[in-house]
Image 1 (cartoon, helix red, strand yellow):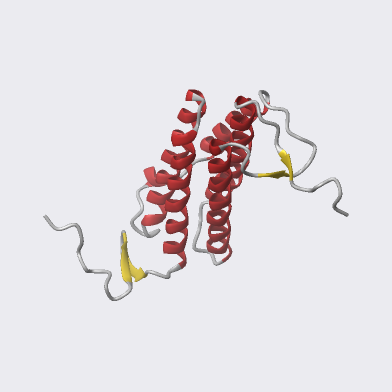
Image 2: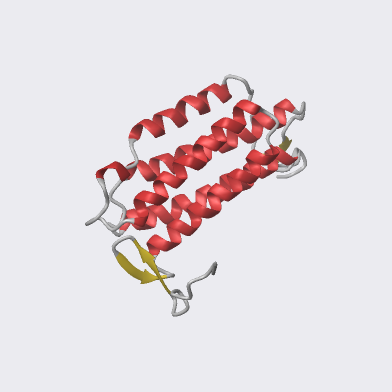
Length: 183
């Protein structure tokens, strides 16, 4: 069995319904989402909270749902491949739940106080990049579902809170980004 096709050797790839360049903006968003789910998986692998682990797995599944929606051209996308607002609401509920367990510091924090927290902070930055790429698509009219950008925006907040929660569970206070001697 071969594990490669060679069909992309000329710099193109398939969307469901079209063949596009590998540098197409939709492919850029799909790649950023793929990176995001992988980095969330890294954070999940390090997470000490079983409950947080489950929530992170749900976000990875949501990202796959978003990728599935974006992989189709508008003309042939089934209605069932439309990411819905209820997932944004779910993220808000989970973020609020984590927020009820953690006191945020009154300052910017330096990532890296714990391995799980650092991994989740990296995931947050990758999600932010995916969000920027999705906004680019939205501004050009190639992203018709505004719930995708809303979800990515909320997901970065959840990942920030998840990182602080993991730090909290380890008994670690967040390191200030600004030293007391800085201007």
